[in-house]
Image 1 (cartoon, rainbow, N blue to C red):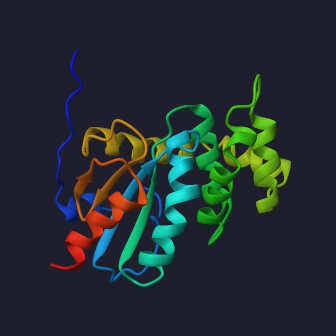
Image 2 (image 1 turned 135 degrees about the vertical axis):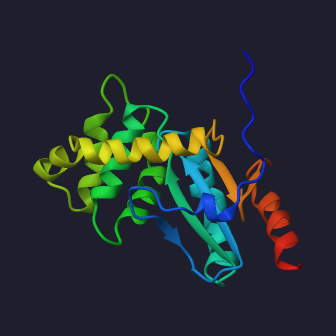
Length: 192
């Protein structure tokens, strides 16, 4: 059975329609480029993007007001969902830094066997969680439902079927997510 290919372009108004949780945004709302990333916290390619490529994009495009990045959850497994829940519970202003920390330390928690959860807690407690606040967070069914709803909308409406998936001003960005490829895509928009 062939996987149905998602649309190559989505009306920006549809793509940017708010979901059930506040958007996780880096950069200026007035930036000429809005890039949406769907990522799973346990995905190695996502960590690679966040650890190696995003710092370059941040310095050259986000901090200079050219690109706004919107991060959306697309958990591929239960552990990724738990990690996303923890980032959402970290509190105002702490979610994106915790996402960055979890991607930076992904090797230390995501692939720990048999049970990666204590290793995950070890990292998130640095963001101020107690065992109690953490347990309360990761058993919050409404929060889990909201994160799953973000993923399902990504899959069903926008055709996201792998992570990381990017949309740049509504266009699916299918290239290998290297800094050079992003630069090419951005250049095309910025000079128009």
